[in-house]
Length: 484
Image 1 (cartoon, rainbow, N blue to C red):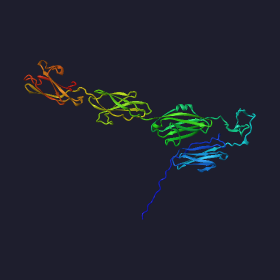
Image 2 (cartoon, one colour):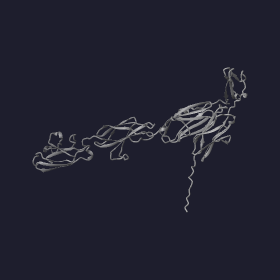
Image 3 (cartoon, rainbow, N blue to C red):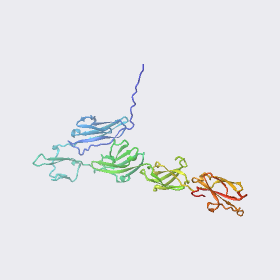
Image 4 (cartoon, one colour):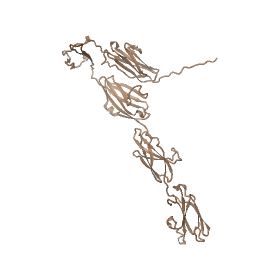
């Protein structure tokens, strides 16, 4: 008998408990017959997260309870809606968020202003502290807490039932403080620079009476808990207001730009803007070109690209022989100021091929290298003479001369041939020989090829055809370009 067993898949265990954004009913303006809605939004927490509502400690079903509806636009928020307010809706509403890591709740009290005609008293003509006018205006000379409440204004004539308007007057014991940002903090935090991959914190303190609603936005619109997985909100109540922070876990170039923050409470609103600059290594220089070629130097030019939101410091020019790699120690480097877009690379060897590239440097680091250009320096006349010169008498009137090319590093180009000059050396000048050049007008011969040797026969004087009777000088050229 074969027994097959199955094990259940491991359950996901949350590590971050849920955190809710505070919410408040606008009790100062809500009255019977109006519509009310509040949203419970998640600031953070590992999924899955359950969001449920309670009214006076009792669960509110997903359908309709006493005219209360629950709408779920996404997995990060839940909205409570009351289409037709009445006094039965007065009470405490609680939003509860729960996952395997923890549970959090937030509550807000709803007070619906009643509107019953029998509750209103006529305040015309003027009585006590209030002074009504025929145009519908009421002036209070000294507002007291007892003046708080609903005020009904009715307009009637002999036609129809008339018109009425109810206004609620809220009287605060102390002076009301509208939401307002700190001016000095706004100026100091107007620009924030963060390196790519690091965390960015955009935060402001907002003064004013609670509750204060904070809304963040950027070039894409309003930022909410579900806008982007890298955005996190953090809010803390202070003695004179709140501290609101927007956190971006790991910034990249797309996060650069202007961010708006708007704060509002029942007594006023204010807004501010902060610019986030994400700094990164610069982009590689472009359009690298060779503009000048010499025997020992090369002139190049390039174009500057995006500087990575950080001022450029230098351009680094690297050169090497094609047989080497860019990681070898022999690679030559030249740093030039960031204000330059051309440079002269010097100290090169004539008739040699090089690979050249350019990198840009800012405060964050180095760019990728530009494309590589290959350039060959021009030739120069050979720097060294032929070596190992040997002359032998081949007969009484002929000498055989042999030599080897100069050292390879001194060729400075392709050797096309040699010039071998000779003349008779008089006994009077034996101690002071005069060497010939091609312009001496004396006899000589050109020999082509890199490795030359020649047999001279020019009616040399009999018995003097040896090194004591003739002086020789071999000269490396290229023949058509000159010689040493």
